[in-house]
Figure (cartoon, rainbow, N blue to C red):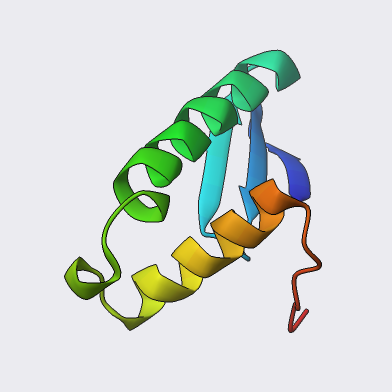
Length: 76
């Protein structure tokens, strides 16, 4: 997870699953991050594979592995 403070805004970002959270306070950015994670979970991790494209399938597999506590390979 990358954490930045830029121009008065906290930014949390996970390039691994293209997850972002923004806020004027760290707790606001974390709340936004949680909401965006829930969206990714509902819309990608729970979707049928046939309905997803290549990048979405990668994100789905990574989300499922993260939630299951499995090691996740990173290129970073």
